[in-house]
Length: 243
Image: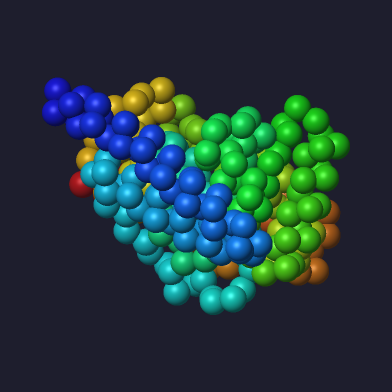
């Protein structure tokens, strides 16, 4: 009952934050074409959300992220709370690669477009490839990309098969991949639920995995290396919960 009452207050506040911060982001984008102002607005928006729902985010491995260096961040996806955790607390200028439907959401979609985030048309392979090519050019220009290689949220908490787009993006841009494992977001907001539960979200940033010089034949081993890094944190969490 307490979580239900908490959520009835939190959800309207999140809509309010979205309108206010989205408006500030759009207004600031007139004067800042780099996307940095929009990123600051997004970061503030995300931190307001996590605090409102009672989520404490702990970042592990921030030392692996070098300032002024471009990366492709590939993250596990357990909950909608993964996005506030990533955007709000990752020490990097992130641009999200998201399905095009997200860009149609009022205020949020307008912010994403003006900030230079990447719209992916999953229904068209040609358009999806073109989007990744544009993103590779932007990454070489100085920002970092953020994708969920599973494509969608896990239903049972287990790591799902990876899609290749994020890996090809990193190889094409010739930048390192940072595997991200987000633990605890599923407990704060389970899939198919709108009831928030206060809790801790642990975000693990692993050491960068280099892609420079890799060929198509190396794609499978690259995906396996990223998967192994993510699984190590999920297995560690399982052992900790069994003690």
